Amino acid sequence: MGWYSEWLFPRLLDRALGHPRIAERRRALVSQARGDVLEIGFGSGATLPFYDPARVTALTVVEPSEGMNKRAETAIAASPVPITSIPGAGESLPFSNASFDTVVCCLTLCSVADPPRVLDEVRRVLRPGGQFLFMEHVLSEDAGRRRWQQRLNPIQRVVGVGCNLNRDSAAMIRGAGLSLGPIVQEIEPAFGAMAPLVPLVAGAAVKA
Image (tube, rainbow, N blue to C red; front, side):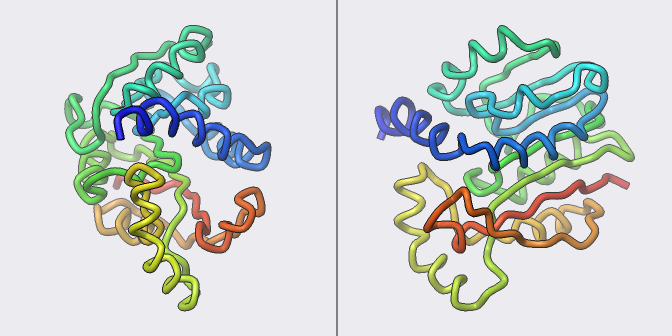
């Protein structure tokens, strides 16, 4: 799995998520970031063009994949926003309490080993009033689609290097004690035949 997960999969993922519609969704999310920002699951840096240097003081990015970190080097070097890149996982963030104004997760909670622990860490490192900006594919509201998500999830976890089809990210975010209003699932046509099984949600949760 080393060659696949660290060399081939990062390239396949970048290609799969390279559609302009996905880029526009990233832009809509990340353009809200302000102040000292942390992004968990930075990947190859696909969000980087959408951070506003006029709003973002500094950007810290955390990514566990060696292959993704390697692919991100060029984007990081060209960034107009000051960046600190730290290899590592969201379950154990090496930052003090209340260190960031904004935390970003973009198509990340589907793949982390322990989502509740990651979200506990998000809440810990956010400053009071800080925002958690997220975009995730989630467990469908439709019963028939949920059944297919559960059936296909073991295969998806292998092909997607730990990615899950059946996580209710919004419920987990609320369960972590972050304030989140109503959100709407959307089917994104850019995902093609898989679109009904990867409904997207996006939002901004707040630390009280």
